[in-house]
Image (cartoon, rainbow, N blue to C red; front, top):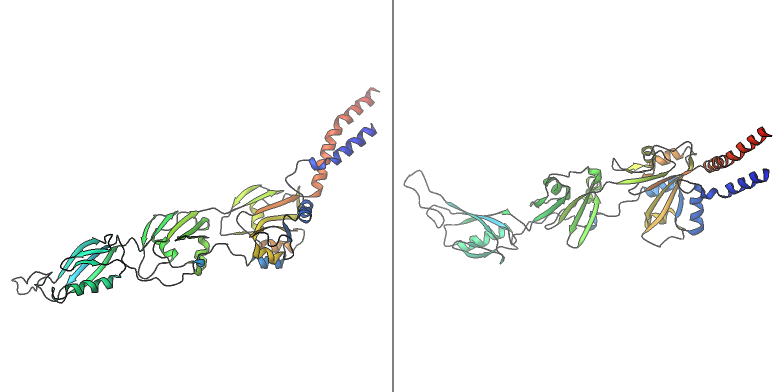
Amino acid sequence: MRIFLTLAAAGLLASCSTLPTSGPSAQNVVSEESSFARYDVVDISPAVVDILARRRPDASLSGFADFRPAVEPHISVGDALTISVFEASAGGLFSPPPSTDRFSTGSKAAVFPDQVVGRDGAITMPYAGRIQVAGRTPQQVERVIQNALEGKAIQPQVMVNVTRSLANSVTVLGEVTAGARVPLSVRGDRVLDVIATAGGVRAPVNESFIQLTRGSRTARVAMTRVTSDARQNIFIRPNDVLTIIRDPQSFIVQGAAGANAEIRFDAEGVNLAQALAKAGGLLDSRADPAGVFVFRFEPEAIARDIAPDSPLAGQGAMRPVVYRLNLREPNSLFLEQRFRIFNKDLVYISNAPFTEVHKVMQVFSTALSPAATGASLYNVVK
């Protein structure tokens, strides 16, 4: 019987690696890094937190390098123009003669209905013929028409108003109250101005992203960044396309936590302390306080500052990094409040070493229970 018990215990202890578990132990995470160099393991320290504070989102609207003020819109094919002609006295080309009422001098102006600029870039003006207007400003068109009417009308003065402009507009799509082609003003319109004109966004600001397409270039940034950084709120140009995309940001929690789940950000961002609290904290009966990890792909520029001697340096634009926090140290409670969680981060809490031993003891007890029962019956019968 003793030999049987000894062999059973040895077999159970040898099979510890086959026991069910929620993930690798803290020792496994570190040993995998050192053995195969698949990722860098970095202890969260004040210096590391300071380096990570310099990390910025990858995309930026400032990359368009367009901080110029808006230019005056030019007339284009498809635009609608309203033209008014004023004469110095009644009885001219565009004004009727004075009425018999001695107190009336008669009308001195004529307003022509909207004219749409044709494919040839011109409009027809009575007594002036076909006038090329495409590519010109309204002030330039006024002078052209006025010169064409000299000698025909009585000291003519011309006013040109663009009532509808397709070329000088921006298309707004996506999660906005009213998607439309928004005309641009002469004063100039920035990103947030155009979104406000379209009625604002329908989704929460912290879940909204602004995608700007200009020609063959496209950039996508968080709306919270545009609202907080004036450099991102650039001037919009004609024919730009603004798309508001709803993309809830989230992080994943696994291991010995109160809840294993994907958790959404309910604000612009959360720190590690808030992330652990949202997941229900560490389980006292299972968690290893020294084995709190954050798995993340870091931009090479940041990873180089954090782990300059890593064998993974220079192997790609994004480097896998595992951040480790030891919550047994009191100072770590301050560090976790400064460590920012990014979108798609994975927070993992390993099991304490005693947890595996406890599992072995439970299996060992279950396996020996029939034998102990049989031995007790044997003693009674004997």
